Image (tube, rainbow, N blue to C red):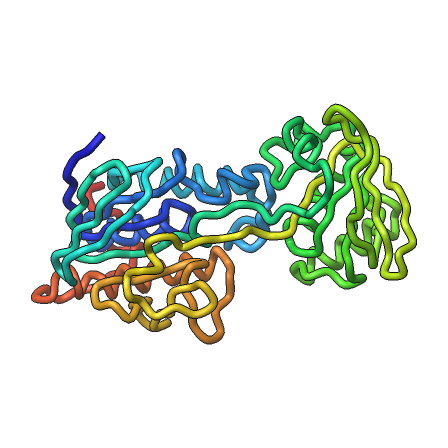
Length: 338
């Protein structure tokens, strides 16, 4: 499939930050187009943890990742933004005001400005080096994300990891899973302070078993059916934890792909931006969300939302250099076209 598309702003990445950036572009009467390698919008929220609760979205004490994407799509709907899904951007040519992107399907997208909202880039889970793990992955006994909480109903679940995903799912499965054991190589968890405090309370009540400091050593079972997860402490003392499912949350291995070759300044596999405008070192190319790097950066969706708004305003000047932007609050301007 091939074709030609025109837009004011080409947004690479249709995760939550890319969706909100498209909305902000619409509010400024810029014409965006969304491009994403995944077949659905939502990025990691859709692909990795649709039922995971998110606690730091303003006005939502808790909201499931999939529901957040649904709300962002509803917010964006009035602008009828075209999207090219299941496509990877493989090339960039031209300059500010006259860029051309090419996709792996041969499509050409003309845009006056580029916004990279690619999150972590192409991603995949970091897999623990356990013998025979592939057989358990094939049956779902070892998982790196949870698509449906109901799949773990009544099961003995061992969770490995020390970050937000591990802690959040340990808390989310209370009252649903038959048992929950959380394995981490340190006694301290790297989760949000409120989540860590809730975990400590749940452990004190016996709702979650903390197995620390320990690391995964082996899987026991047969024919893809998991029976136990073997762990060992720092002295090598081993124990087996009864398990139907192992959830391994060791982060994602990421790759920016061709984007890394566009000449933008990079730091730690991220794109360096001016935090005031979200501009990269390449004129006309901007970046927001987890892919963006600057001093004081917080990898939070809400900060990505703020960056999306700032980038939209900065891109207006790049798209319409001869047109002054008379900004009004949304409460007075409303949604254009409504």
